[in-house]
Image (tube, rainbow, N blue to C red; front, side):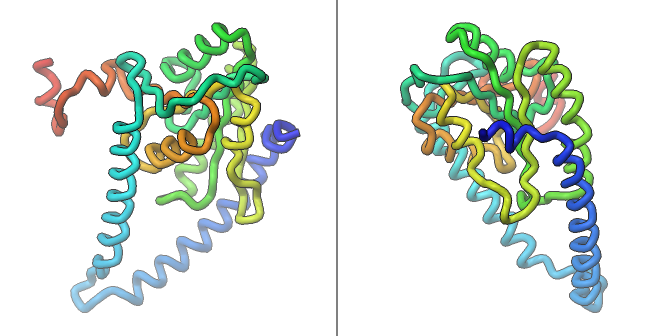
Length: 239
């Protein structure tokens, strides 16, 4: 049973200790490399650093434009990312919690609950943590792992199945969202315009045989209400 494999919360905290040791070792090695590469002015060469971030930016940008071209806006917060039919033999509705790691004030979770009620199906909230994403660190992993039990209890209080999966190393199972999607009626994901989220959403929208919806819960005002870039607080205040 896939749930039996993924829904082990104690394993997540055991894995956290492993990650702490791994990242501590990696950080030490990186510091030594930086010290060796400092030039006579005490600066770290930045050509490869800038190239790496440019490549990430271009990848995110391409993924974001793909979603814009292939998506259908449902309302000011919800976008449908593909044109697939609802699975009539589904066991649940799946919410993939990626960025909005909270139960309260989460429009994506609210939308997932609404769709589950419409279809008269239980809701499953899936949250995964992989070890190799850009800028992975002890600080980010601690923030995520410390909130797991709180979210589990809140979801349990609402009658929602919460599944947390920690991918510990290269031998851990991959493509877990796609596997869970096989028994889902539809997928609700988080709509977030940067980091790794646009690419995650693009891939699952392509691979899944069911509808995928991305929901904006970034703030009080939906992102769709901003028709141009807001680069400072004073450009938002008059609105």
